Image 1 (cartoon, rainbow, N blue to C red):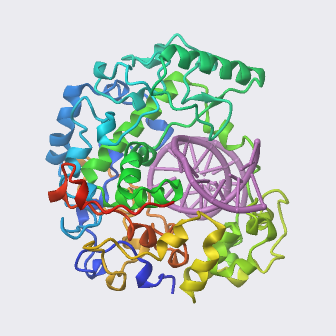
Image 2: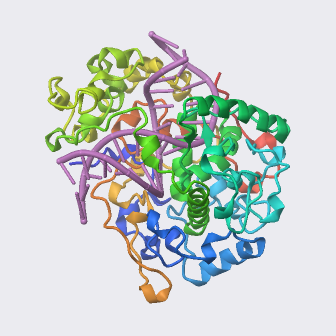
Length: 466
DNA sequence: CCCCCTTTGAAGCTT
DNA sequence: AAGCTTCAAAGGGGG
């Protein structure tokens, strides 16, 4: 039952049958547990003195071999062959893209297709970490013991940390001096102080760090600008990323958290989490999880007639709120279950064409894009051949099973795998109709044959979304 | 201006 | 303890 239609499963081996064999046993260790501690919880903070310090370039250089030596090296989770995998960056050349072992971990040069919100003047070289990594550092310089920072959290003026509110970014600062930057921030800080609630953002997790780094590349390759689409692609790439690569991001994220905690010892995500919304009532199991979904996600584009009014107008979903939020209680008034229980997984689209026609409701032009054929020569995995199960989607490190004992270098304190995580990227049946679906999008995404890299623009077919 | 989409992971709250 | 919810980034799109 819960299996989405095979055609919607984006993850599969190039032989088209990922389920024919269990995922490699080596895919089991959360990369961020490399330090042998139960990571992922605040409890790890400060526990490991060495980890409390930023990695030196030499350390970064060591990271790879170390990981490999501890048995982490492994083939890509989704072993596309170089010729078949639609994402060039996931080809073996990927390791060059993310040059973690070099001081320029985050290629910031425009030529690399990256852009950074932080001035390149930041002393990246001092530690080998990217400027992004210093988002928590008030001075832009990372201290061996950032906890000794003279800047109390509430005085911090770092843009990435203290902002007037969530999802509010300062303008691109690539072309601004740090002083301008600071003034700007001071102004915003004053505003924030006025409210007496400076918004300290959450530290970025591994995936967010990865997204931040890779977004520009995906944008360049696909000439897509819609983040929703980009994120789907990035999600797929993330899954396809080798463990070693992911481990680096987990490590980065772990250090970000550490640094964040040291800079803002009193900060708690609670402040942000409870900022605006009340927590919602636990969903009714009988509703199969759909009660917590907004109409769009619950019914899909092909059933917009079931959407609540605000949803149709792209406003805040009232059912979503009713489902435990603001009304905090008894609802189930709204035939939520109709598509509901388990239904999410089996409300396969009936008419793609129609839904595409309806899809103008959102991320716009993509619906038109969806009807385009793939760029010539692009070898996309056949959806029909794709068979996958969410349980094999390796959606997260938690899904992995470790072949190693703790003595082998890992503290295998794996939390039990979540029963059935969200649909892995692209496995949501609704994706078939979703113009933003990975399958739809990646079908339009540029395929860069690794052998054709080096700026051979002629081989890049770009679908412009305008 | 606000909210939507969309992704994964972390953290905290709720049950 | 398990499950759930929110928020991190991003930027185009719609009302």
